[in-house]
Image (cartoon, each protein chain N blue to C red):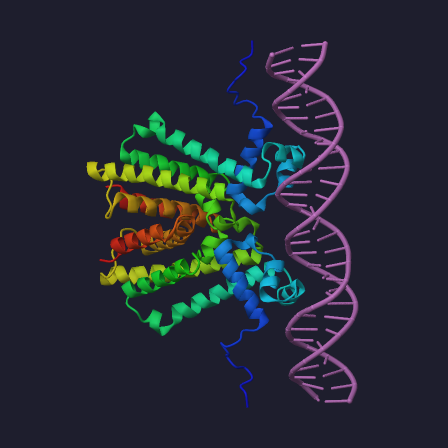
Length: 197
Length: 197
DNA sequence: CAAAATACTTACTAATTAGTAAGTAAGTAC
DNA sequence: GTACTTACTTACTAATTAGTAAGTATTTTG
């Protein structure tokens, strides 16, 4: 008997392959840089197959952000992240951004959508706000604990510092795209230098 | 006798009106969010009139960035900016970003183009790199003098700090668009708190 | 086994896109 | 005043876009 609800990281179905490719293109080239035709050709299906799974591009975009939000929550609550001391939680966050930089100079979700934000469908805007809000709240908590235990050092409130650090990281990935990885690493080193007591 | 090469801030010609509107739309909505049709309709001319002045959208985009680069150089070399002490030069920079935030939540040029950078024509990419490079070099110099005179305080090299601060400011305008002006002001306050000795 | 849902393809529409070619009206040069 | 330039408009093309409707093969369900 084959497991009917198999996890199967082996062969993702079309629905997932569409979402994966669209997400890659969003983070690597921008939301307006790909069409249903591009996706279809690259996946070896017809454009209408994509409309079947994601009736409109709005739906597809919203699905991308919604999945990233689910991933964020899952990551944040992972024991190997949640149980870490603050300084290492910060390093775990940096590691996520490092992965983005290494994968075709991907920007983060926020950096990919912020400039075009006003042209995005309302549900996508709402999901992105939630995504950014939850990530900021998480980091604020990490910073608060870090400051209390003396592991992290900064002036001002944890939530103000959290907004600033996340904004800097989002921008750093954009700078990497415009120039090269060098300024990205410069910025992250600078953040480490300032934050790690 | 009327001055033939009058400065005439009174009535800009079509060429300039196109550039002004395209720049506004670029900073307020994104580069892919407007077409020659949109511009033409808003300006009361036909799309072909825009092609006359800027044959392709690439030309128009490049003209926007080139003008911003000219403006940056002019601003930087203005006596009322160049002759200021470092802390006030930094405040002058913040004031530019404040103006962006107040004008329809405009992002800066860099923030508007970074995400879509790979889809931009090569001349536009080159101009944007120059723009960002020169702005960073200017701020690095300001920070170096500020640190030497004790007016500004930071760890690490002036150029590393310059890259970090500009990246943070670019990101801050994007955050303002996604949420509201509040986080933008939080970030700038945080920068002031950290930098001003 | 029959009905129904799933996952598509084929074939199409209507709108929008950047861009071009040819014509024109008004001003400038000599 | 004739030639030329400037600054457009009109009218068009070819490509691409998102999206739809109808049909079909395969799988699932009762």
